Image (cartoon, rainbow, N blue to C red):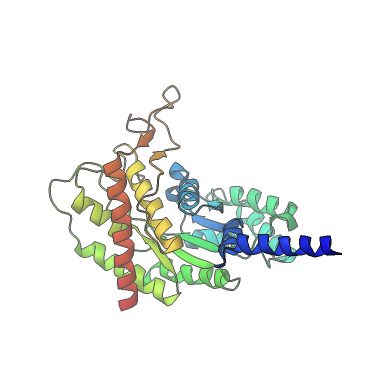
Length: 328
């Protein structure tokens, strides 16, 4: 009897020591819990290039030990949110509650659309949705975050197609408790060569304010790439943001974008993140797969200064965006 009591007392003493009288044991146990973040990216090649979603995953997990970010992408080259809607991408946003009947209707609609030779994306969308229908229950996901990419559909402010369709997707996302991030692309203002004079900020700020107003309307955050590009061009005019022989964002702009998405995901600065390289997915030609479309190394590793500047500019741009959103 006495031995059993001593064992109980010893166990209690051990527990008290583990708690360290201030709950440190409980905090340690909580920190060991594995967190996951399921993120859906809807966009085109501006999301596909450099495997942007995977870069965001690297940054997110580097900046949040114990976190696993699970990115899913729905991508059609050159397509806008309105095109995605016509291709049934909204079904992926509402996977948690999508019915088989709804998916069958989408497949039937795309089957008809694919008969039109001018509708060159319907065939690919049909294959995607048939696969979803086949593996219907196994693909159910309740998203934590939905990222909506713009592409030349955000130039007309509140009258733009982006401003009309982002709220449609946002409503589906928020119905399941997901946050929305607007990924604003800026193909018109990305520079292919180093700048010799400061860029004109008037149109950039006009566009940024429109995105901020939209974000406030639908309670969203944003990767404000018009602002980020402007600040980069102003503070680091030696940097280029797009390829010379390819109209897409280059490795530098892709890195800056990933940093802005990190800021939007966590409302926290990307400064100090160790991720220091970006690799494009399109190479120069069949025999030079290690070079990008401009003939430079397809993988770009940033110097400590360049990495720090890009991370700082991303955070500065995100903070400015929040001020514009609050003022809308």
